[in-house]
Length: 280
Image 1 (cartoon, rainbow, N blue to C red):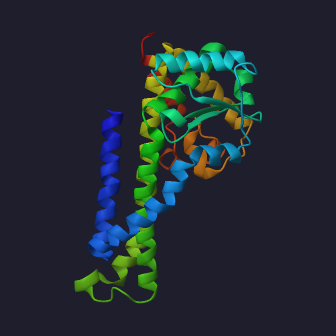
Image 2 (image 1 turned 90 degrees about the vertical axis):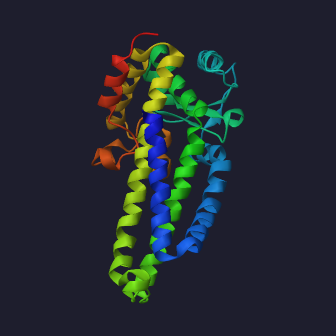
């Protein structure tokens, strides 16, 4: 169901791009905006691991430095039929984890020092299996596609804003008038952002389900999510909003005012779904 939802949402983003491009600049407007957005997100996708790891001062660990953590990742990667990813530790007390890298062979799994302190082995296995599922499901690529489409929509909306300011679109028959341009400039970025966040939420549900199957213990991941949710409220993480969607729990929990504007589904719903699964 969540896979279908992702497809529908990506289709909605594409449709929104075509609608706005056709309204404002026709086929040429769509192509120009898409090329610019693709160029901006290409570097982010290709170098995402280096950018994010540097941002959070993460350091790679060897099997000798953290044998238990390394062993868990290695075992779960074998179960998931994935190459062994590189394993990183992020300094800091805030408990969280994320995966990055452009594909399975360039994947990274990172955990904070804080998460290693508060989770037991079953819970840690659930979290790491969740992150490996993101890698297996190619969520970094899907996120980049969504970002490219959303970026193109926002770029066209910005063009519409400047066109309205300088008086373009005054002929209703040709461009829908200045009022239409202003409305587009306001509503299009909001719609694109909401769709992009909805895609992120649907991928989290899929990663929870896949993580439960890889680890064989949905209750371990459910317990981890509860612990991480509670801890995130008392031990804030200084996270960049642009990377919030990568973490297993939203590092900006205290700043989220509504689920609609969140990159993550409500923890309660995620836990409920996991606890409804049978032990595998």
